[in-house]
Image (cartoon, rainbow, N blue to C red; front, side):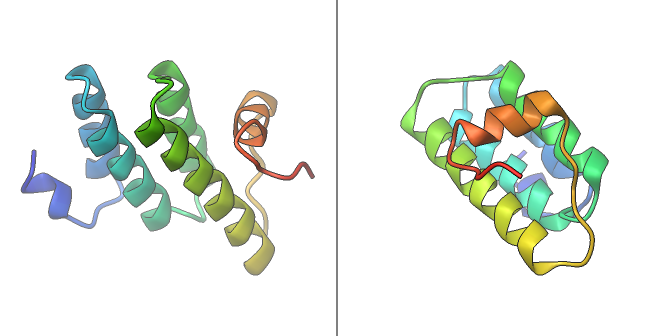
Length: 104
């Protein structure tokens, strides 16, 4: 898993995140989610998949909360600075809003 985590890929990080979550390795999982989203930032379905995985594996830990806060900020920054927008589902929009994402 450690060697795979070094790959730049549009699929591997999300699979590794799921793997890490299954072993309770929240920090490693969230690092993979962030890597995945940075690599696939313009892909709306990637955001939906990643946020769905994150919500299912919710953990009220510093690593989890800090990471989701960074994800919310990255989402907001990306949509503000790029052509087009990423329209999240209402549940994912609400989830990120709880971590500081400004609405609309």
